[in-house]
Length: 171
Image 1: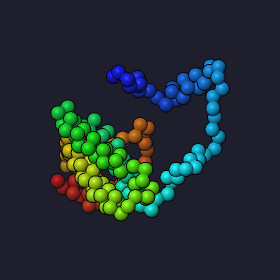
Image 2: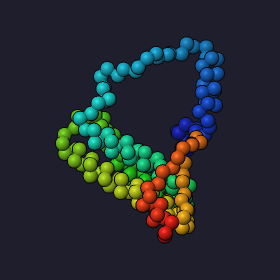
Image 3: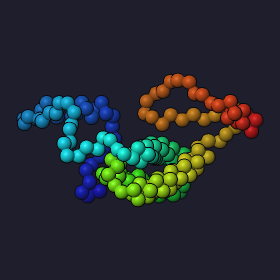
Image 4: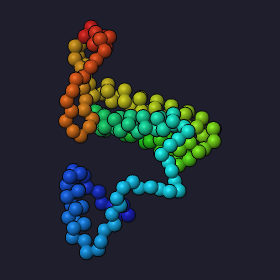
C-alpha cells in the first residue's frame, strides 16, 4: 500500500543478524543507550487503577489467542465476521490505553466507563473464541484437543479436572 513501509515476515535471529551487519557497515556512529530508559516527565509505571491494568492485559492476551485460533479454525466467511468483532474489541482496548487511563490519573467516571467497555470487549472475544473452538474441534467421546499457540515447542503436563474428564468420557 502506498505510504506504508514494506513488511516481510521472518525470524528474529535473521533480523538481528541483518541489523548487526547494517550497524557494522554504517560510516556514522550509532547512538547506544546503556541502562534503563528513564522518561523523566512521563512516569507510567504505577497506577491507582490496578483493575484497569489487569483488564487491559487480560484482554490483550485473550485477543492474541483468539486471533490465532480464528485464523486457524474458521472458514473465510466466518473469519470476516470474527475479524469485525475482534477489531471492535481491539478498539476498546486501545482507547482505554490512553495515557491518563492506565496510570490512574483520570476521573472516576472514566474508570466506570472503562469497566463497562472492558466487559463488552471480553464478551466479544469470548463469543469469537467459542465459535473458533466449535469450528476447530470435532469432539469424540474420550478425546481432547490441545493447542499450542506460541511459536516454540512446549513440554509439560496438561492437567484436566476430574469433573471435566468424566464429562467428556461419558458424553
